[in-house]
Image 1 (cartoon, rainbow, N blue to C red):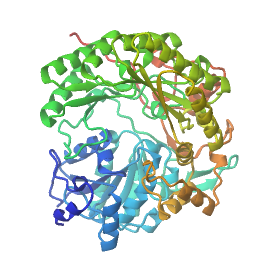
Image 2: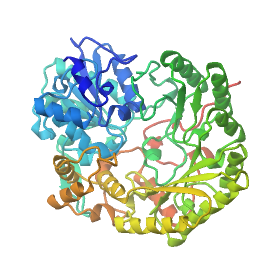
Image 3: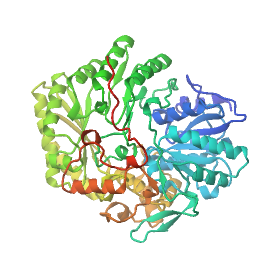
Image 4: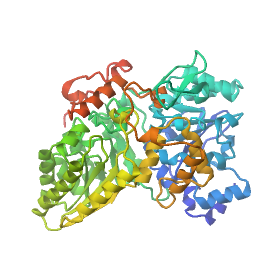
Length: 613
């Protein structure tokens, strides 16, 4: 393919490949894997997981891994009009020539893009209609409820890709070399590789005691449930020290280094805190080595320290000292995202101030202490204002806060408490400087699978709109610079449906896609009317998925996958929430028998010993 024809399309740098550190290998005698992030290039190339898998696979001699992304609408239209299949960036080879096409599913709002990419690749969108290779894989955080996408995907990888991919490669390479059919290769995957879920080997049957359909294996050799794979030793985990440096600006245009994977906090609304358990920390020496290589190999002027809660790093003083030395020696900015208000020390505030003059962001989530206790967000008013004293005292004038509404147990008084807290924060900040500005991001709560709130109903769209109207009215009364952005209840509705659905939701996804739904996460592309029409056409009533309190004994469709934390633990946390009782972390109170210790011994949650500096 002559890549010069791409010059006629919007942002041709999305498609030409050949970036610094991209890998080009001969195809002969290698398993050919196409890694696909189902969104635009600038979004997909921001994915740390994609970077890891791309270089991990290409470091294997018997594998060639290339990339593809959702094309812009102009290129997609051209491909269809000319009968040309979607191609890879590295070699411009058509998607059907690969042995494996592997999707990253990090948000439910890309599901229609997955179908569109399969169709652009001239492949049937449903697994049952595909008769030969390539095998369609999917992984990522959304795979913990694979059922809504089960009819479209041949196999899901559950858990950490660094653990899964070597076993997947060995099995599929052997199957390809032996001339096995696609169906036989899938049986091999399901029966011999832990962490692999092959939906076609399970029948979806109506549940006896709930409105769900549940998946049951068709043969004894197939596991009834699939347990996630967990990378135990994060200190020696594979990291790409020569990641691709794109030609164009990305959504998150910086180098990234994971401080740790998982979280010890136990916020009851947080799916990532469950699915990425246990917390596994990277030693400071490994972080230092990564920083040195990453900066030398890429020239990035900013590096982000990736984690669910940066200030929970066990040797935070040592990390801050390392960042300070690196900033002074190499003149780069190193950012600490995911800051928490209950452990935000002065020395970290000083360091961040030297590298960033914009704003700081904190997630308070709820306005009242009672509701913060319900969700186990262990932040007190004392810690909120102690941190703000540090923040405003160091000279910041712009602070952003995340809140949610529609949380379990929420009352009208809790909504008013949110407004009251914001007013007191604004007034407190004005005592330090007159130009203090408060930005708020206030979003509808979506109960997620594999969390203590998976039994809870979600607010209806009408309820959400009423709460937004109330909050807007009350916030307008505040003096000073307070700006609030509200999440779209329609998006929350769709996220709830797609994250908590069973296999029947697949027909809704396909119907919406065929009617034009694409790029649902982009405001300018989102077509809610198409989704509502698809629900009506497929005779799917969302109420049973979204708006009811689910019985304690009901089985969930996503329990065909084991996220690693037991149902009993989640239920006990839910019951604690009903009493507004908080729970300590395992680092505070020792092992709380959440289920991790059943498959990972010893549980690596305890932080490593600090180094001398």
